[in-house]
Length: 328
Image (cartoon, rainbow, N blue to C red; front, side, top):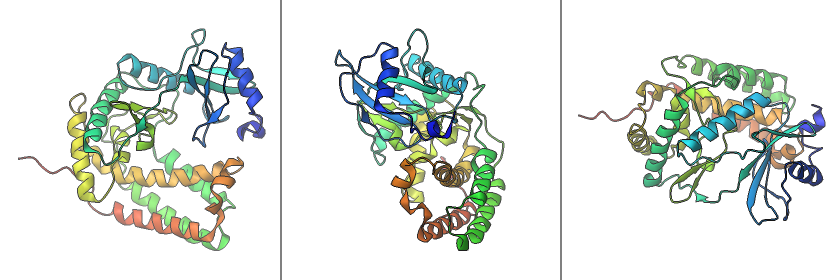
């Protein structure tokens, strides 16, 4: 796939309409872009006034086999009566192609925003995460990656070193702080957890509320520790996070046991996400959507703040990890 396709320059409305028409869908409305930088996602209405969402995957990221595993996991969850947005089949296939692009069509499922500070909603989400992981434990991904330090720390470190986006005068200090952060994570990254298929990116923005939670976007699904799908739901100070964690885990364990030793991975996982996200921005800079939406990435203030954020995370990693209050 050429670089033009990687940046979606060849994906125009006519291409999208042709791709859908090839699979028997006649669009009877405009294509409304939805919030997604990694892929290109559009909502539309067909001639029968049914609403759908079409997702075009960024070329060079996932293989057809990896996308198929994402879809299969979504369909398994749906079959287990878990509220998960799953792709539609066309002649038995969910992974569709057009002009070298992989794409998929989903029913359009509306809902309210999940309230991240609502304990009742958090309890519901914890219960469904237990069910998601109950399904996720049944088998392993064969093609999608395993969450680990190579993808989330070591490879991004190389991206930083070879990037020309950060001011040269700040690069040495930033790389030194990055190395210290990596060392701090490596000191705590242990193997005392069971690997399972995860949502992978279960933050509040990927949960809608429709008389209960509706989970969307398995684009980052991969194999890893269960706590990866829990920690991004936490917010506030440590006391608030502890209360939230107790709520989530109590509900979670109605369906699936939780290994409390994984709580020590919360801050390492947070650090890995910080590093990976920054490398993701740099890797996508050739896509015109990124300089347009992240213009501050080349500014000195941004890199000074990132260095300070990494340094603060190092301090957090050296503190005792978040723990549940013992029950007597």
